[in-house]
Length: 246
View 1 (cartoon, rainbow, N blue to C red):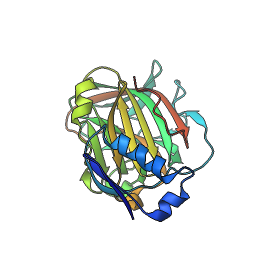
View 2: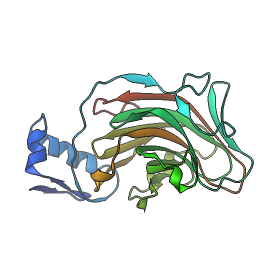
View 3: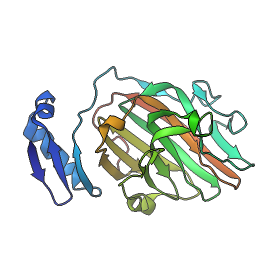
View 4: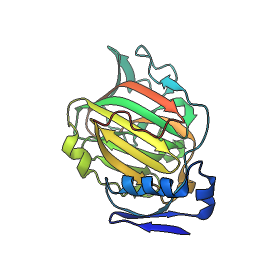
């Protein structure tokens, strides 16, 4: 085992993983240590390198309709180039607008706004549609939350995840547009909110990571809600680079 201890976390990599990397082990681990020093604390986690595949950039939303997505038609619509999630009746189980296509490693940029209610929304990934939990389009997997309860969650799994929502609360907007970037590679997730890196975290249980759809969340609630999404662009197997940090 190779161990390098920092003031913020312990970076652990088996020799096998290091040898598989197409870069020098020392350089790779140095980059990990530098990244770890910027955002939050994390318990020991394996380093799973990014997967390889064809890189392509996809507009997940065409600005006109919900082609390429599935969800409850009475809750999801398109208006003035914006995906609108809206409920007037109570929602017993959080429901999602899901991409028909599945993804593993990706960079997703999106702009989102909580219009009505104080309940958070989110973007789900690395999981699956889970109708056995009470809704045809609910989700089991990872969730990046915004705004209100910023942070990360494991839906129908471990529940709250370690990343602290406080850095995002400092730069996020409660009832205005937020520019989001999610970079998911290997078992590492980085999140940028309005130009600021707010999450840099490796899942210590990478066996939970699945190729899955992207899901836009309309949270369970007894109150009316409205959430807007636009500018959803995804790059598969992206460069190890954040594109929206200022």
